[in-house]
Structure formats: C-alpha cells, structure tokens
Image (cartoon, rainbow, N blue to C red):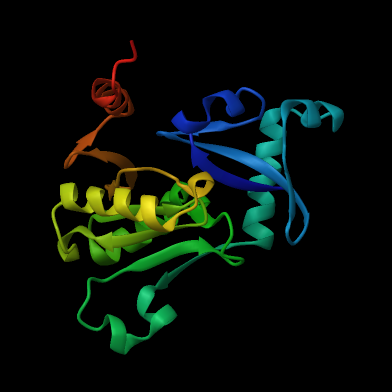
Length: 203
C-alpha cells in the first residue's frame, strides 16, 4: 500500500468512495500495488474488508513509502547532463525511488524546507502525479503568471489527463506550501472562489 496525491476538485465523486486526506487543493489516497504494473486504489469497502480504518490505511501507506520507496530530490542537471542545463534556471525534481506516484513529495515540508534553507523561497511546478519540479523564486525565468501558463500548456500537451496534478503553481515559503493563483499567494478558500468565478455559468 502506497500513497498517491491527486487533484481534489477533479476527483470529488471518486473521493467519496476512498479513504483520503485533504492537502490544499489536492488529496492523498492509497493504492495497493502487489507487483509492478498492477494496482488497486483502496476504497472504503476494501478497507472495511481488511478491517482497517481509513486513517490506518493512509498511515500504513505513508510508512511503506518512507521505508520502501523513499523520496529523492535531484537536480535536473544530474538527470539530463550539466552541459544542457548550464545556462538554464536551477531546477530540481522531487519524486520517489521508483519515479512513480512521487508527487507525494509535495507534502514533505521537511525535505522542501532543507532546500529552502539553501536556495530561498521556492516555486513548485505540479509536473504530474509522479513528480514535482522545484526552482528557487530568485532563479525563476518568468513571473508567476507566465509560469502558471507554462504549467497549463504542459498539462495540455504532455501529461495524460488522468495524471494531471494541478493547473497552477505553488510557492514554498517559511516552511509551508502555498497556492499561487494569477501571480498571488492565496488561501484555499480564495483559490476555490476565484475558480468558481472563472468557471462558465451553465444555463
């Protein structure tokens, strides 16, 4: 059993059927993965069959992740080569040892906090449910509004619909992950309100 982070708003109906924890505009769920390429999302009924509470399932998933698929923070340079990235922004990849469902790392404020001590405030790009990308605010190539547009474009062109994590960026400041919307830090409530205002009214 391992944890997976998914978008909360896009999975409201599904989340009614599975144990989950809210994390900003995301949700942490659990999946049973007995072997590579085979997985079952843990539902409330499955948890009941196992005689486990939702909290117990999620706690076990996190414990398994820490011991069996630990998170790792790497520079993009180490993945694709220093020569390619020499003149680009400092970019880090946060995922797990299997590079699958590693976006759970967005909940690890200790690991992000260590990077903040080194690099200062951070922007977090929700690359997919498998990983997040992190860059120092001071080294970002554009303002946060342009970065948000980049995330939306990448989601449309490079990420499978079921693997999209979010359509905006986050900021890590003072040890806490914060939602960014239209270039500003906002609370979850403000983000939800802004999203409702932008949504078309159905007649």
